Length: 518
Image (tube, rainbow, N blue to C red; front, side, top):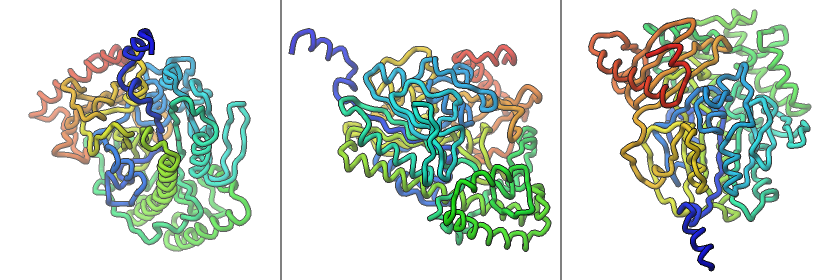
């Protein structure tokens, strides 16, 4: 080896010189930690997802910067908060693909990049050597995909299986084996309206899921929480969501439901209809008042029926997802990539499984602000167990760049998790997280808000058409039921958190600080 080449090798970051790890990043939609048994064993078992945590690490304080699908994806791709990457909401957002993104920087570092599945950023992907994405939200049954030639191609089968088929096929037959790769496997699961794989139609039908402690929350002292439209009893569509279809009933979302189910053909549609029609007949016998399409009947019996149907269908969708995560893990092991690949599993945000009487996400409350994050580490990274530091989805981009041995641009807001994956506990690790949600007025009517969280205390400001503050001590009030803002004895904590909030808004240059100075 020449002196020049020795010097060049020495100049490379240690991670690159020693090992060029592949990265498989699996992200689902609306999969919450409550429905993942390595986090919570009350509801279902997810053995394959648990394998990742068992053979690697589980992050216990993992959060998002904006609990909404498109914005969350933009934060992941750029390592920046929504105001800086420009994609603040789904209603009017179009991702600017010309901007600096982590996949482009990974390409510059010599990695092959690919994304398969849900994109949901309106513009077409950039920075990927290969992509095959879903139009908009995509369909669970017999879905279509958009190819790199901008053709829309219909596929046969169940979406979660197809996305995994395409991902494995790319790794086996399409990648450049002379390069390390980063593969993004993005599932539609577990997004509304939770259409199960047909083989799992009857799964969980004998399970009665426990009613959450906060299911009958009255939202006292939380005006924004009272104003939302995410109630299981009032806002969950009896046809679209609960699948209690009848030919003479047309709810607001019935046309959407008909379109989705019409993608099934022949025998498949007969099997689907036979199962749900029998449930529907029984439902309208028990609750005849619902036959006119009202979705505002908020009696406990109807609310709890809807909750059980919601939980069962969601769990069925997760079961297929877990199967397919297992397929990816098995493939990596069988083809010899296991030791050289970092496997990351997360969701674009958390979700309400009846907590506060809700479904959906958006709020800075724990169920939707938090998101699962587990990583199966490659050979040479021997840490196992829990990582308890505060982490956020803006951290994924710098982490992957760090693992690739690539420089991390100074304008990225996130920080690399690599020191944590090495078992280190940096003294200067962040002490608080910043959150900002923008999409109002819009679906579900969740007010705009921003806030700060330090691992125990949370301060939230709802703004624009409302001016309300909320303060929670999660140590004494983990369900976030008691707004302490303005109460005697909380002055010091409020002052400290407002100062921390201002510091983070300045650090990330969020223009909201000029509109609402602290």
